[in-house]
Image 1 (spheres, one colour):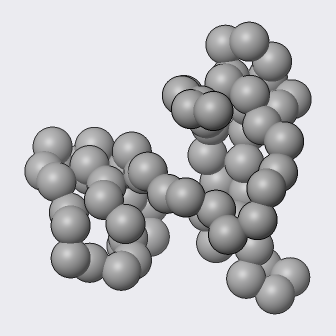
Image 2 (cartoon, rainbow, N blue to C red; image 1 turned 180 degrees about the vertical axis):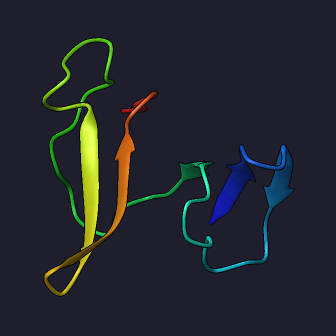
Length: 67
């Protein structure tokens, strides 16, 4: 995972987590396919929630999609 920590304007390449209330730009490749679009094109498909069990561990908005 490569992410840019927006709170401190630094790049994180070796950490496997973000701290609570950190804002970051994260790039990842999913293991299975799913349907998304960028937030500007469609707000409903431009939001994401990452769950661990029944708890939301990350909420975000999709800024760029590559096909």
